[in-house]
Amino acid sequence: MEAPLVSARESTARVRVRYAETDKMGVVYYANYLVWFEVARCEWLRVTGCTYRELEDEGIVLPVIEAHCEYRRPLRYDEEVEIRTRATLLSPVRLRFDYEVAPAGGEPAAAGWTIHAGIDPDGRPRRLPQTLRSLFE
Figure 1 (cartoon, rainbow, N blue to C red):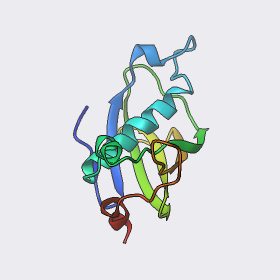
Figure 2 (figure 1 turned 60 degrees about the horizontal axis):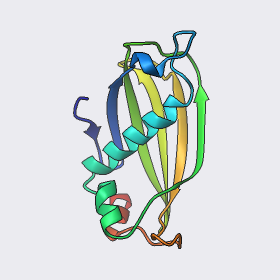
Figure 3 (figure 1 turned 180 degrees about the horizontal axis):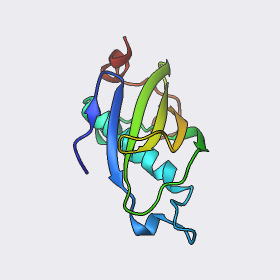
C-alpha cells in the first residue's frame, strides 16, 4: 500500500482489489467496502498522529455505532482504488468519518460514513484525547 496523503482532516489510502474481495459476478462484494473504510480510518488516524493502538493504550476504544454505504458502480479485480477519508468531530466523545471509494483518478464508485463513540474498556463514554480533538480546532 502506498503512503496515504493527508491534510488536517482528510487523507487518501490506496488498495488494490484482491481476487478474494470479489463475488461470483466478478465485482467487489459489498461488505468489503466497510473493511476498506476501516483501512482508510486507521490510516487517517496514523497520519494525523493518533493511532488506534495509542488510543487503546489511553483506555479509549472507538466502536462503530452507525455505518452507511451507497454503491454507485462496480469495482473489479486488480483495480487500484483510493479511499478518500474526511473526519468531523461531532462532540467531545464522537467522530464521524466520511469516505469516497474510487478507482485511482476516477469518479466515486461508492460513498459512505461511519460514526464512532469514544468509550472506556467498561463501555462507558469517554472524552476523546485533546490531541485528537485539537485536529478540529
